Length: 149
Image (cartoon, rainbow, N blue to C red; front, side, top):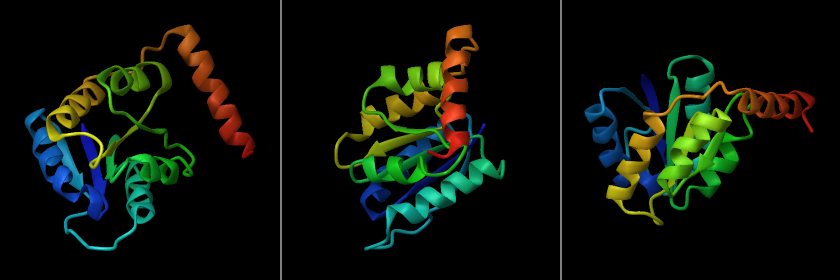
Protein backbone atom coordinates (compact mmCIF):
# COMPACT_ATOMS: atom_id res chain seq x y z
CA UNK A 1 0.00 0.00 0.00
CA UNK A 2 0.93 3.63 -0.40
CA UNK A 3 0.89 5.30 3.01
CA UNK A 4 0.80 9.08 3.44
CA UNK A 5 2.85 10.16 6.44
CA UNK A 6 2.76 13.63 7.96
CA UNK A 7 3.54 15.43 11.20
CA UNK A 8 4.08 18.79 12.78
CA UNK A 9 7.22 19.71 14.75
CA UNK A 10 5.91 17.83 17.81
CA UNK A 11 5.73 14.58 15.88
CA UNK A 12 8.84 14.88 13.72
CA UNK A 13 11.26 12.65 15.68
CA UNK A 14 8.65 9.86 15.89
CA UNK A 15 7.78 10.30 12.21
CA UNK A 16 11.34 9.41 11.23
CA UNK A 17 11.04 6.08 13.07
CA UNK A 18 7.55 5.40 11.71
CA UNK A 19 8.72 6.06 8.17
CA UNK A 20 11.30 3.29 8.48
CA UNK A 21 8.73 0.99 10.12
CA UNK A 22 6.25 1.46 7.28
CA UNK A 23 8.95 0.69 4.72
CA UNK A 24 10.07 -2.39 6.69
CA UNK A 25 6.47 -3.64 6.59
CA UNK A 26 6.65 -3.52 2.79
CA UNK A 27 4.67 -0.36 2.10
CA UNK A 28 5.53 2.76 0.12
CA UNK A 29 5.72 6.05 2.02
CA UNK A 30 4.46 9.39 0.73
CA UNK A 31 6.27 11.76 3.12
CA UNK A 32 4.30 15.01 3.36
CA UNK A 33 6.48 16.65 6.01
CA UNK A 34 10.08 16.08 4.94
CA UNK A 35 11.48 18.88 7.12
CA UNK A 36 11.23 19.72 10.82
CA UNK A 37 9.79 23.24 10.91
CA UNK A 38 9.59 24.72 14.43
CA UNK A 39 6.25 26.42 15.07
CA UNK A 40 4.42 24.76 12.19
CA UNK A 41 0.75 23.86 12.58
CA UNK A 42 -0.83 20.38 12.59
CA UNK A 43 -3.94 21.41 10.57
CA UNK A 44 -1.73 22.13 7.56
CA UNK A 45 -0.37 18.58 7.61
CA UNK A 46 -3.78 17.05 8.30
CA UNK A 47 -5.06 18.78 5.17
CA UNK A 48 -2.10 17.62 3.06
CA UNK A 49 -2.53 14.06 4.27
CA UNK A 50 -6.29 14.07 3.73
CA UNK A 51 -5.90 15.43 0.20
CA UNK A 52 -3.34 12.72 -0.59
CA UNK A 53 -5.87 10.05 0.37
CA UNK A 54 -8.82 11.72 -1.34
CA UNK A 55 -6.76 12.24 -4.52
CA UNK A 56 -5.73 8.56 -4.36
CA UNK A 57 -2.04 9.41 -3.99
CA UNK A 58 -2.16 7.17 -0.89
CA UNK A 59 -4.53 4.51 0.41
CA UNK A 60 -4.15 5.30 4.12
CA UNK A 61 -2.40 7.81 6.28
CA UNK A 62 -0.48 8.18 9.52
CA UNK A 63 -0.62 11.61 11.12
CA UNK A 64 1.50 12.57 14.12
CA UNK A 65 1.41 15.57 16.43
CA UNK A 66 2.19 16.05 20.11
CA UNK A 67 -0.97 14.42 21.46
CA UNK A 68 -2.59 13.08 18.28
CA UNK A 69 -5.80 14.87 19.23
CA UNK A 70 -5.44 18.06 17.20
CA UNK A 71 -4.35 16.12 14.13
CA UNK A 72 -7.37 13.83 14.48
CA UNK A 73 -9.82 16.71 14.85
CA UNK A 74 -8.40 18.50 11.81
CA UNK A 75 -8.30 15.39 9.62
CA UNK A 76 -11.89 14.45 10.45
CA UNK A 77 -13.12 17.78 9.05
CA UNK A 78 -12.44 16.41 5.56
CA UNK A 79 -15.23 14.44 3.90
CA UNK A 80 -14.01 10.88 3.35
CA UNK A 81 -11.31 10.97 6.01
CA UNK A 82 -11.89 8.76 9.05
CA UNK A 83 -9.14 9.44 11.57
CA UNK A 84 -8.69 8.32 15.15
CA UNK A 85 -6.09 8.68 17.86
CA UNK A 86 -4.99 5.20 18.84
CA UNK A 87 -2.65 4.42 21.67
CA UNK A 88 -3.52 0.72 21.96
CA UNK A 89 -3.26 -2.02 19.33
CA UNK A 90 -6.89 -3.14 19.67
CA UNK A 91 -8.18 0.26 18.58
CA UNK A 92 -5.60 0.49 15.80
CA UNK A 93 -6.84 -2.67 14.08
CA UNK A 94 -10.48 -2.55 15.18
CA UNK A 95 -10.84 0.98 13.79
CA UNK A 96 -10.04 -0.38 10.33
CA UNK A 97 -11.90 -3.69 10.66
CA UNK A 98 -15.16 -2.25 12.04
CA UNK A 99 -15.14 1.46 11.21
CA UNK A 100 -13.13 1.84 7.97
CA UNK A 101 -10.62 4.13 9.66
CA UNK A 102 -8.18 5.34 7.02
CA UNK A 103 -5.95 7.62 9.12
CA UNK A 104 -4.07 6.59 12.25
CA UNK A 105 -3.24 9.53 14.51
CA UNK A 106 -0.46 9.22 17.06
CA UNK A 107 0.64 11.39 19.95
CA UNK A 108 4.43 11.59 19.92
CA UNK A 109 4.46 13.10 23.42
CA UNK A 110 2.13 10.40 24.75
CA UNK A 111 3.55 7.09 23.52
CA UNK A 112 7.01 5.70 22.87
CA UNK A 113 8.39 4.61 19.55
CA UNK A 114 8.09 0.86 20.15
CA UNK A 115 4.37 1.09 20.94
CA UNK A 116 3.92 3.43 17.96
CA UNK A 117 5.49 0.82 15.67
CA UNK A 118 3.14 -1.86 17.04
CA UNK A 119 0.18 0.43 16.39
CA UNK A 120 1.32 1.11 12.84
CA UNK A 121 1.69 -2.60 12.17
CA UNK A 122 -1.79 -3.34 13.58
CA UNK A 123 -3.29 -0.52 11.49
CA UNK A 124 -1.59 -1.51 8.25
CA UNK A 125 -2.23 -5.24 8.60
CA UNK A 126 -5.99 -4.76 9.03
CA UNK A 127 -8.78 -4.75 6.47
CA UNK A 128 -12.44 -3.78 6.71
CA UNK A 129 -14.43 -6.86 7.70
CA UNK A 130 -17.45 -6.32 5.37
CA UNK A 131 -19.63 -7.95 8.02
CA UNK A 132 -23.23 -6.81 7.66
CA UNK A 133 -23.35 -5.06 11.03
CA UNK A 134 -20.18 -3.08 10.27
CA UNK A 135 -21.36 -2.15 6.77
CA UNK A 136 -24.67 -0.98 8.24
CA UNK A 137 -22.93 1.16 10.87
CA UNK A 138 -20.42 2.67 8.45
CA UNK A 139 -23.26 3.53 6.06
CA UNK A 140 -24.94 5.41 8.91
CA UNK A 141 -21.72 7.38 9.42
CA UNK A 142 -21.65 8.19 5.69
CA UNK A 143 -25.26 9.39 5.94
CA UNK A 144 -24.35 11.77 8.78
CA UNK A 145 -21.35 12.99 6.80
CA UNK A 146 -23.47 13.55 3.67
CA UNK A 147 -26.03 15.55 5.66
CA UNK A 148 -23.24 17.88 6.74
CA UNK A 149 -24.58 18.42 10.23
